[in-house]
Length: 316
Image (tube, rainbow, N blue to C red; front, side):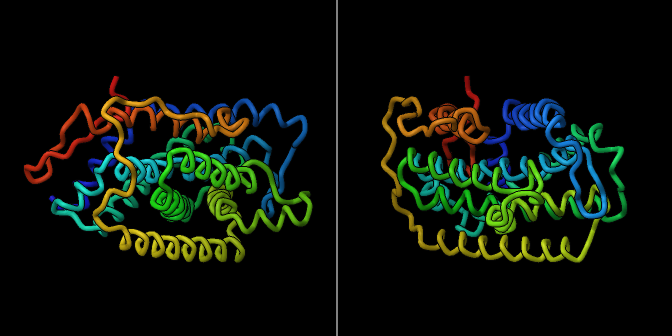
């Protein structure tokens, strides 16, 4: 079996589980069917291209891109745990290269992004089906957005996790960056009507391009500007992937982080910022961080007969 396939299998095994998948669906459901319909009293219709969409339809289509971005946290958490627990050095001492490791992480988040997009599209279909105009390019556009968006945001999460040494710094920075991407974008509300400086920032945010492309595919509003957004999104993803690969070339086989103690420690919440615990990324990161204490303790996976310690994120 190819080394990348082995590593992808390992990544999916330790990252994707029923709890993760359920959370990936429940959180968007709350936004779509609670916030979406509750805010219709304030936002009746939203213009997108040549169409006027109901706010729930606008939000449901935006949640597809939002969920793709959130699913890429898997990549950052995998790299963080691998470096903290010494797994990265063990992998590098086996029949794997840094390129194998990076490509396996990118492949993992691309798969997770596609699955996440499919789940939210299925869940949100009853909301936006009346406004939808499916065509031959709808599925290719959603697949393009899922893969390129996963690579882009996965590269950002991986770069952050590769450069930071403290768990507190990792949690705070990853939350700050992803909250900025989420709320300074058109995922939840349109840029039209926002103050001009804020509307400008919206279009400096790659998540805006991601959700615009998805909406264009669903509602049949493909324009030259959407094509330009696709080019920009692809270019950003390529640049960030090259940066990520360059960073990993600089990481030599040495302990990059202090080894953990023998006894599992509870996650440190001293640096939790106000309000973060109510938003999606932070509780998930804390949950995965806590479960990572049994990550390399309870199970053994065999790569070419060599034991590599890892476990399930939910090993009760």
